[in-house]
Image (cartoon, rainbow, N blue to C red; front, side, top):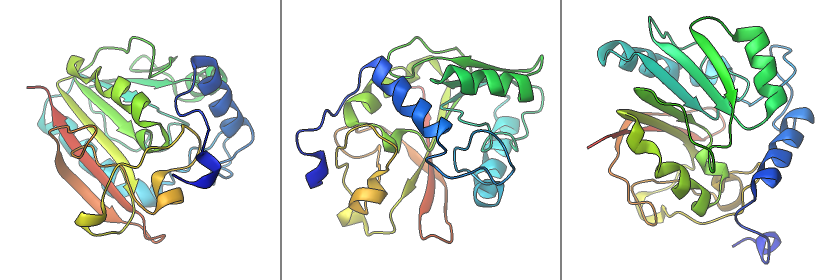
Length: 222
């Protein structure tokens, strides 16, 4: 564990998570939006194109009627996904971010709701998207979210990984904050490995100019 993490609380309470992400978005701690938006989740379209194209095809091929986007952020990553006739529910913890999204992107087919992914009951749907979310959370909080996936037919879970060999991969725990496991440990989040041991299939993987590998895995309800 990093020295600055020693003695630090790993799992946050609900109000602590809300305050954390309020500060991240209000103070643009993930950088300033390239499109000039008030909030920024650092998912520029040029870096998410392969991911968005894959998810668009998945929705068409699997007759998805409702997409639930857990940790939707500023809607930048999902805005370019072709939903066809599927409805969309974006979920995030910060109420002002959700209000902003509803005002700018909401429609009869698309809505945003403020919920805590760790503690709250989540909306029902066919396909769950969790994009660049889990790798900033503690292992305990990740497990709590994963335990809710059984209500979806499919889950597509995307995180940024370090460019390392398979024998170096491990799930090093960290407190929930704005940093990833790659930031601190030059490692990643591997849901197929302990302590998660999820039965997943890698369905989309590509490297961006920073060297980070964007990896999407598919989980299907048994």
